[in-house]
Image (cartoon, rainbow, N blue to C red; front, top):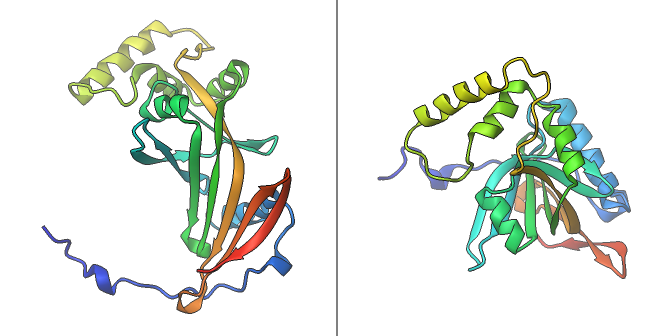
Length: 216
């Protein structure tokens, strides 16, 4: 079945200003911060959405959207069920890729890096800062596991609401935690007219960040 839209005819021209080494930050984290501040000002709702790509032990890639929840010690942090598909794949292969796409500014940032678990104390602190409904949802969902119906989840939520009734603080499930991604490279893509996009990649060379331009 073909989609109704004529996919081949869908296109847009990019009219953003030049992004060159001469006006880029020397530190890729400062450059990311500048771009993130711009998109957060223009479109604050879920500007922290990022695609996380992992791979199975057989090398099969999987990608999904998660939310950036912090940048600490030059690491990008997100939280999830550690027994989910992504958690299991990271456990076996910590090499991951993050991708941000901000269409409002015709910008993309791609980050290749290594994932490691954050401390249980840090994960607990963030978990208990979430809305109560989200905390109960984390308890209720065996993420990535097959379930018979949505009703199974809804019944589980009711049971947990009763279990935690009257408790101001809900404990963090043992299978819930966070990951910190240490970048090995960060690529900044700026859409430009005629598909002659600007691409700058920062990479580590003898523990120092270097930057070079890539062809579009």
